[in-house]
Length: 398
Image 1 (cartoon, rainbow, N blue to C red):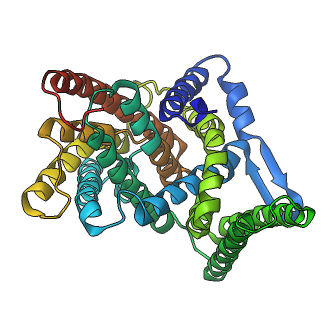
Image 2: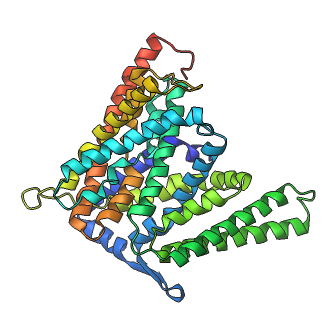
Image 3: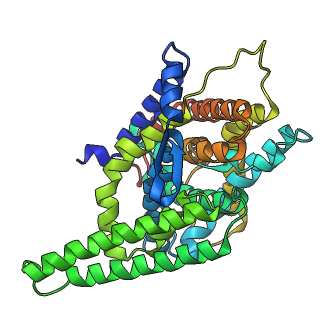
């Protein structure tokens, strides 16, 4: 089970699923795959009818965002972002990693009509980035992982905000309020569950009945929250974020522990496979649009320039009790890893270009290609830095 929770496993399964999806989409099986992806599956009495592809991105992916929210809450309360001194430099680095890719995207798409989709290349896939670091980064200082984790957590928070704000169509304030109330009630149930676990008679029949009752109640309230948010006009994955933030500390940790293998092995690979079912365009017949080039350059180069530049500025001008111990080379490694967009970038691409399938497919290819370039750059840079640290060891090397 430990293997299924590993960031290495998650990264390898994500990459394999994306390659498999791209390969099938450009094989004789493409029509079968797209037919399955487009098959409508509904819950008639709730008025829900979505394609299999939308069930993956609008429902299954909620589990991933639920876990992300739990991680965010933990980092803000007890982890690497629980004080100004710890958070300020990763926050500045994350800001640079958002602004520069956004600027590059807007420059490339100027006067094309696609400028409003600038959030697409601003995301960092925390699971994939940490997975690549875990696979090839043995020997780097542990501070590289700590800084990358803090930066990527803030990046995820920015991505969540972008999805909620920029990719919302005619939101229903009433339904959003109901969703908030339901998530608060979910948090109340989780606190009751925590108190139950700390009770005096954990083995009694009454204890077991109340335990199962609370679990069932939380599942039902969680589903109700998803349904209300889905109907509200906000993207349904935000329900996972609301529930993750609302859940009480210890039950949240337990839920993350239980769901993490499911997310790593099923949820994320399934989404990557579905998103990568894209037929490669024949350039003579279908010229690549401005968003393709914008994403392709903004992800690897924008993230690298933004993160490295902002980190250097923070080291130069921001004084805290937690000074950066990263050397310039390690900062560059972090910047390269930050360009691995993948999950959240693919989701934002779908939300931005969902109606225009041709541009949406090109966006998927650009996210995959840009992330691949970042992976290659990161691996090369990590290898160089590992050799350096083995020659000149540091106290924090792992």
